[in-house]
Length: 440
Image (cartoon, rainbow, N blue to C red; front, side, top):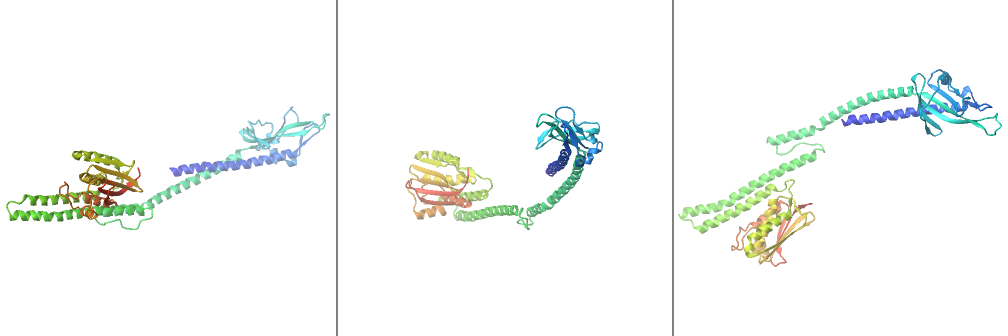
């Protein structure tokens, strides 16, 4: 459709340009005939006009030839002349438009001819008069039949129409072939995806043109990412099964050795299993959701919700939670993962704080930096490594599994982030979390 519209517009432009060029040539011929008519005109003693035939176009002598002249005085009735080609007719032009020395317009001619008219005012001196410098003005008019111009334009338009029809059919055929040939790589891509779905291939194989190669590369990356997620899930399940075997073996051994298994032994082994289950479930869920397209989480609502919940949980200890977030800060990831990380850090700070917990979230370049500080006893560098990486519990008097900070570190790594522990200006521990952020 756009090809047809473009050809149609181009045809109109070319047709108009050709007609304008032909009419310019036609007007140039009329201008030449006007110059010859003026050159042939000689004044007589009374101010009349006498024509010398040698300067005139011979078409002026043939009746209704399509080329005419007419000389009329501006005042009075005598002294004018008309060409033999007009015979007994007269030309009455319509409105004339001045253009240089001539005025141009149109008129109806003999036998229904459509005439192009050129007119000019010419003055001749009158010799037989007592008044010196006396003159008489005439209107010299030359008219030509536009039938030849119309015929040339019609012939050109006919050629133009057929040429553009053939060109349009050729373009449509070329577009059809271009689409058929151009979509071959996409059909190959579809077949390659079918092979992957049917289990005959693990990734997109083959050479693709530069326009399709980025798409194939992204699809291969997506397939590899999905494979990595499955591999991570299998690894987590395998690790969990491995860690559960030992406590279950201990319980089975205790049950076989004595009819009554000590409650302390059962409690310890159940606690170990519960910690490992919580740890690997959190890692598996985070590994499955990281790098999913379109994930974005506003940080301020998450921190506000966590502050309200933790303030109620630790209301008996009168803990003050001061949470401040930079406006428009957005985490490039899932809300559950941000809640898991920030919740563990804030809950840990509330457990060990004396009165005050301070939470700050800021944007630094393309990163979200979350810091959680407390005014508790703090930790030595050795203890920080033990609780931050290995998930060991240093004090059994405080409730918890001891894996909170380790889970934070694991989820942060999945988002290509970092998690560090340091000294707080409040006197206790400072936890710093760096995560990917996006513009609001």
